[in-house]
Image (tube, rainbow, N blue to C red; front, side):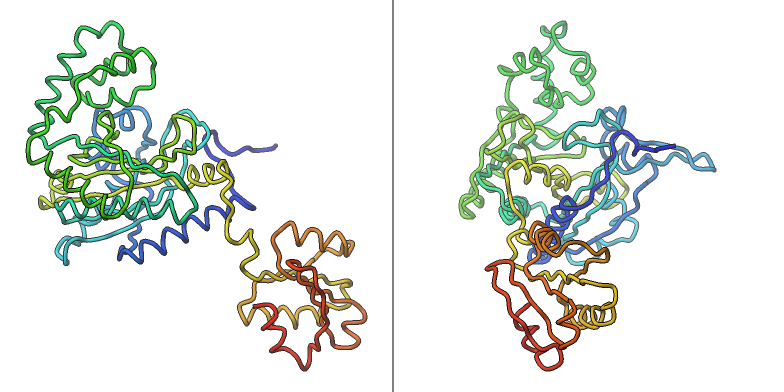
Length: 423
C-alpha cells in the first residue's frame, strides 16, 4: 500500500531545503545583530493558552485549531501561532524579572486546519520576534526596522510597510460603536462570516475577501477618526523614526490583524513586485494587555512573525537566487573512476572534510562527462577526478567549473596548495 502525506502537509527536499536554510540562517544572523535571543516552546499547549490569547470568537479558535484530549481528558492544542506560547513561557519562568525589554525570537512549526493553498498549509513554519517590556514607539520602530531589513537581506526589492493603529481599549470601544452603527443597514448584504464577527470581533470584517463586503467597507468610517490624542501621537512618533531610517511606509487605515491580543500599532510588509492579494510578506503589532491576561504583570510588548515556506515560494516567484547557487562558496565533487580506488578516495575526503571543505563523491559509477555535467548543475565549484593515472602517480586532477580550467597537483607534496585552490 502506498501512503501519501496528510492533506495540508508537504515534504521539502533538494533546493527547497537550501531556500529554507538560507531564510533561517539569514534571520538568525540578523536577530543576533539586533540582540534577540532564541526561545524554544512546545509544539502543543493547553487549549486555553490559545483561546485566551487569540480570542474565543476568532476564526482560528473556532475553526482552525488542531485540538485533542490527552489520556487524562485535558484539552491540548497544536500551536497555531507563536506569541501566546512565548508569553506563557515568560510568565511561567518569570523571565520578566530580568532587564527589560526582553528580546526573544523563535522558529518552528505551526498548525492550522484550513483549506490548503499555495503558501498556506495546515502545517507550516514560522520565525518571529517578541520584544517584551517596553511601551516606547521606538521599540515598535526597531521591530519594524528588523522586519524590513530581514526581507532586504533575503533579496526582496520594492518593499512597502503598511501600518495602522487600532487604538487603546478606550478609543477602540468608541470606534466599535461607530462601525457597528454603520454596518447595521447592510446586514442583509454581508456574508455569514462578517455577520458573525459583528459584536464579537468586528474589526475582522476588514479582512473579508468577499466582493460585496469589500464594497460596503470601502466607505466605512476609519478608526483613525476615533483615535485619542495619545494614540495619534504614538503613531506619529513611529512615523518620524521610520523616516529617519528611510523606511517607506503607507498609513493603511483599513489594516487589521486577526488576533484579539493586538492593541495599538499593527503592521504588515508588502512586496510591490507581487501582483496579487497574497503580497503580504509578514507582519505583527503591539500587544500591551496579553501578559496581564495570562496572569503576569502588566507589561507592554510587540513583535512580528513571517511564514518560512511562504517566503520561500515568493522568493522563487520573484527569481531570487541564493548565494550558494552563484558558486561563491567552494563545493567539491570527487569523481571516483573505480571502486578499486576507494582507499585513495577516502584519504582525500578525510583531508578535505577535516579542513571544512564541502565535498561529496559518486558512490555509483557513471560516465565521466555526465558526472561533470551533473556537478555543474548542482552548484559544485570544482571536481577532483580519481583514475588509474592519479592513483599510480599520487596526483589530483582538479577541474575549476567556474572558469573551466584544469590542473594536476601532487597529493603527497602539495596539500597546502590544494587547500588554497579549493578555499
